[in-house]
Every structure is written in C-alpha cells, then in structure tokens.
Amino acid sequence: GIGLVEIAMAWFTNPDRFKGMVEVFGIENLNAAKSSGKGVLLVGAHFSTLEMGGFLYPQGEIDATYRAHDNPLFDAIMYNGRMRNVEGVFNRKNIRQAMRSLKAGRVLWYAPDQDYGPRNSVYAPFFGVPAATITATSRFAKFNGSAIVFYSHYRNADNSGYHIHFSEALKGYPTGDDIEDATIINSHMETAIRRQPDQYLWLHKRFKTQAAGKSARPYNDKKLKSKS
Image 1 (spheres, helix red, strand yellow):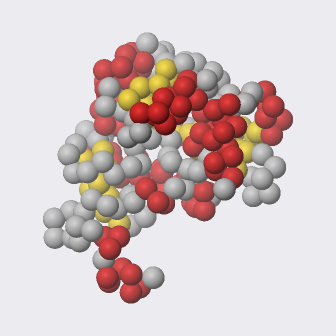
Image 2: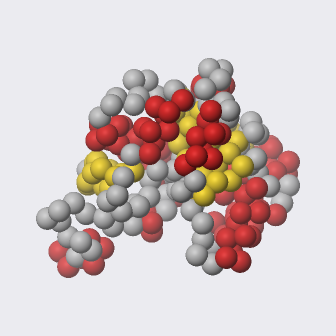
Image 3: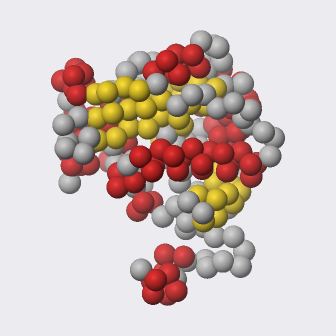
C-alpha cells in the first residue's frame, strides 16, 4: 500500500519535493533540549510512516538505531536508503556507538516499542496490558544526562502531506525504578499512537513475550480469538 510507496520515496527521492507538505509542531521543544549540549534521545514509535519520519526530519544532523534485516541484500538497501536521510545508522546492538553519539551532543533516534524478549526488559502496562519493555531508554538518558523528546509522524487523512510532532523533554526521568521508567515511556507511546492508531504497526506483536503464568503464545490464544 501507501507505506511501500513512502519507503521508496524516503530512500530514493529528494526531500525538497515535500517541504510544502509538512506541518511541524513543537520544534521549539527539540531546540530547547539540544541547547544543553548533552545530546537528545529522540524516542520514536513504529508507525507506517517510519521511513518518512527520518526523511522529513527538519533539523538535519541526526543519528538513528535500527534492527539489521536477516536478508543481507535487503539490509544493505535499507541501510543505504536510511543513510541518505541521517548522518549515522547504528545497529541497535551497538550500544557503544549510540552512547558516543549522545556524548557528542547529537540527536539519536531510538524506538523502544518492540518486544525483544525478557532479557533486559521489565513488564509495564501498554494500553492496559503488561508488555515486555526494554530498559535501555533510561540507561541512555542516565549515561550522559541526555534529554528525552518524543518524535511522532503521521500521514494526513487525505494523503495530502504529513504532520510531525516533538514533545516537551521528559522531566524527572529516569526515576531510578526500571518499571516506573518503562511505564512512563509506554504512556507517552500511547499518547502518540492514540493520535492516529490506524497508522501504528500493530503487526509487530508488541505482546509476544508474556510474564510467568501468562500465555506463552498470546496471539494464538484460543480465548483471545474467541473474543475477537
């Protein structure tokens, strides 16, 4: 669908073509966060407009983390496409490189809304359901005192353009409690998703990993299917 068209646009076309098609909200929040010189962790979510989010980012000078694709050829295409729009693309497992980016006072895009399993995760509510949530977000913030700003991007309902949003920097974060920190992140994710829930990539199976005593395969749970 349109998401595939947008991937092609983001990886292969000139962003200047879209300058008049984008409304930006809260850019002052990003600028205020950058002024500290301690780097900004730009927290995003996996919307269907994901590739356009980097493509339309208005400030330049941004790094990003990503999950390498299992297919080496597609991974190379994806990497090169994303490198057109950002200055550095780091494998999400390369923590040192990400930390160097923040230490240099740069903006680092990072999306903690996927289920990476129980290791280095805690269970925190996400739309009222416990979800395995990685703790790296608070670790990044604590490492260099970097500000946390949420970045969300949406396609207009009539497909006429896009609107992108930068939240105010989180205050009092991290708290020192992993579950509380994860709950804060998930709550802000919910706020971003509620603006345009149809554009969120629910197919990522956010609830795949379950706590002890819960269904190990919730998406195959007969009870859940009977309610749908």
